[in-house]
Image (cartoon, rainbow, N blue to C red; front, side, top):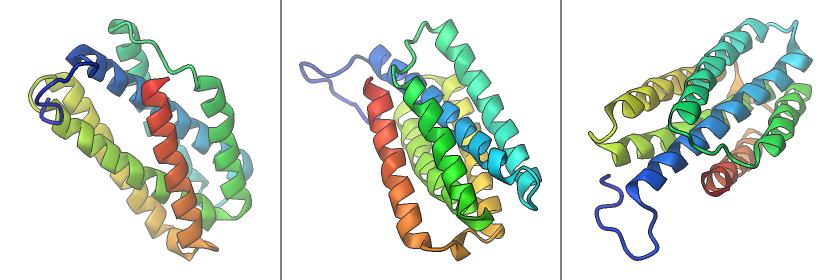
Amino acid sequence: MSEYPRRLPGDPSREALIERMIRVDHAGEYGAKRIYDGQLAVLGRAKSAPEIRRMAEQEQRHLAAFDKLIAERRVRPTVLSPLWHAAGFALGAATALMGERAAMACTVAVEEVIDEHYRRQSEALGDSEPALKAAIDEFRRDECVHRDIALAHGAEEAPFYPALTAAIKAGSRLAIWLSTRL
């Protein structure tokens, strides 16, 4: 992997790095699904609900792909799944309670972090894992579409947009860091 051209003592093996990728991506897609579940619990009849449902369906498809990889490659899921179950739903519901635009701002923030995350993973994989890289690249494109949909639905007009998205991005980055390791 280009990100790790040389291993130092104590560095994770190539196999461990792939396992970490699958673990964190599985956790991320699970968290995204739970965010949309929370948003739909509050905004189920709102104007934006059909778009949120479509995005949620794509996240479910991504999650199913990582569920399959977890099983096939015998990767231990993150021990933090119960936390992401509650935290994802709470984040989705809380931003939806702030209004449709705040829910969309949440989507923008999360998807921008995931875009960056998937880009780094794709670059690190290079040509070593073509099927995994193809899935990550496909899912990255979907996440960018979700961001664009959210922007088109007025995300930037949400109250306290800069502070809201900065906080959500920080939380998303922390969740990635923790889920990679635990």
